[in-house]
Image (tube, rainbow, N blue to C red; front, side):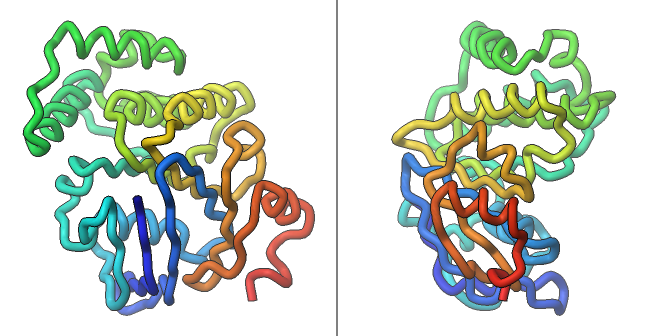
Length: 246
């Protein structure tokens, strides 16, 4: 599904990614861990096509397409979703309007018919119930007046509504209390399927207690320096990155 080979990327004139390679197959969940400044968020932003990041070398393909040659909206229509570390507020645009507009824009780019109002609201009720979001919250401006945990639950709601092929989740567990972490994890686990994949960026092993990854990767100084299973995350939690992030 996602194949990254020898990816180098700068923020301004500063090199951040320095030869990163990774393969994510459909049906897999990969966790990316590593010290601050290692390039974890940069990886997510480069894949999503965020402005300010320059790829200087390497390739990234998604379902056989040159991902780096696509505009951000084309990447989204192809099935890529980015969950932000710090979700932004969009005053004046309700969650429901935002999501229906985004969903139909993606469908048009794929040559699919727009979703009907009835089908859209049926899906809204199903997904929001799982994540504990009431209708009044969904009528608000996107993330306006939401707590940190509510913003992350709202992103998990967007994930369920848009049903992408690949979810890039940048520190989804950041700022969540125990109950919110469990709820958001349930949303991620509902998303898992043999046709989809997840790339989780996290600092903490606690998320991986709820969302069991197939692979855990350590990213340090712009490249992946070690790969293992869930036990690797436990070892990092106990010992830190000394001796690994070399």
